[in-house]
Amino acid sequence: MALSRKQVRNLDQRAIEEFKIPGLILMENAGLNITAAVLAYIKSQSLTPKPLIVCGRGNNGGDGLVLARHLFLAGIVSTVAYIDALEEGPGTHDASVNLDIVKSLGLPLVFVKSPEELTALFPSSSALLCDAFLGTGIQSELRPFARSIVSAMNEWPEDIIAIDIPSGLDCDKGVPLGESVRASRTITMAAMKTGFLTNEAKAFTGQVEVVPIGAPPSLLPEGSPRIPQSWQTL
Image (cartoon, rainbow, N blue to C red; front, side, top):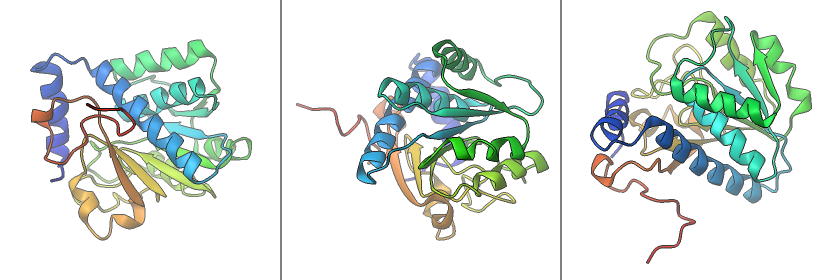
């Protein structure tokens, strides 16, 4: 079973309100398990990456910031391209906390206000771009600025891993909202998304891997991962 946009939102809300799991913990779990999947992908492809992580202002960007931190702890330094054309800062508390952590660690962080500023970062990075720009909540045609950033990411000449969903892809219908990132692989949280099951979506998602976020099993569809596969169980 896959989750719709509404069901994804409901899962997060119930985990926070009914089970008292702070959103910051869910974000940390997501980012840590995304990191494990990214590291496995790097190893499987024999990559020597200097990743570029493209983060938006919302919680999808927050997941990307957690990814940047854990890659750093694993010995891989990424450049974070923080997309904030109007210099508004993070749109959520949890994303703000993780941006402050990235700043405190002194990780390479560039505030990007145009697609040209994003593509200018390409020569200093290599092997892997992680797309944490737009999440599952987007459901209307992308505005010109967001569309230009998505187009710029599609100019990246190497592997792209989408975090949760390729930016610009409709979570429910699996079609571009004007334009979508074309990912080599998508690491999605908690469960498959309804739109990923369409034939058209495969051209944008690449292979899809589901990672857990620490949500209680009662909130998850049957077959969803409960703990990382690398953990030993009794």
